[in-house]
Every structure is written in structure tokens, then in C-alpha cells.
Length: 97
Image 1 (cartoon, rainbow, N blue to C red):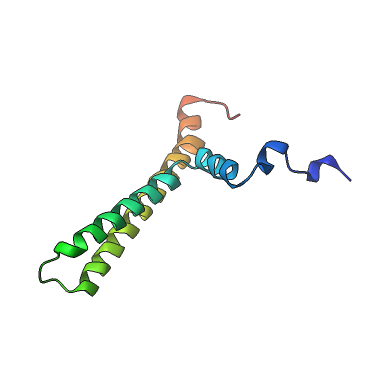
Image 2: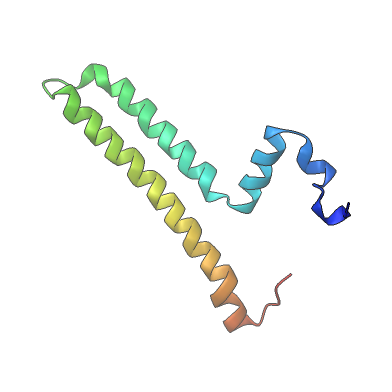
């Protein structure tokens, strides 16, 4: 068996280590998830004080706001990644690791 097919020992520790590695690789995904959770929590809190607005309309607005936050966070992450990979090395002559 070749040793190139085996996983490194630090990645086999469990779900938490994989989650922290993914968060280091793309930091805007946890930001998007945190924003999604915040928008949904706030929307559920405001569900009690929606006055005469229908529940379905309130839930649609809450869903659109949560999706918008996640899409915005992922878009900013992609733009930052493109800047690091393409723009910065071209103008500032930074070598890749």
C-alpha cells in the first residue's frame, strides 16, 4: 500500500477538526451561517409582534433576508479569494506558497 493514499493523523480526529479546517480554508462560510442564524432568530422573535401582517408573508421576508445574507457572504468570500489568487500577485509580485 502506498502512504500517499492515507489520511494524515490530525484530520482523523473527528467532525470538529474538519469543521475548523474548513473554517480556516473559507472563513466567509461560517460568517454566512452565523448571519443566517441571526436573521432567522430575529425573524422568529418578531413573529409575535408582526401586527396585521400575514404569517406567510412574514416567513417569505425572513427567508429572503436569510438567503440574501448567505449569498452576500459567499460572494464576498469568492471576491476575496480571487483578489488573493489573481490581483495581488499580478500587481504586487507576491509569490504563492
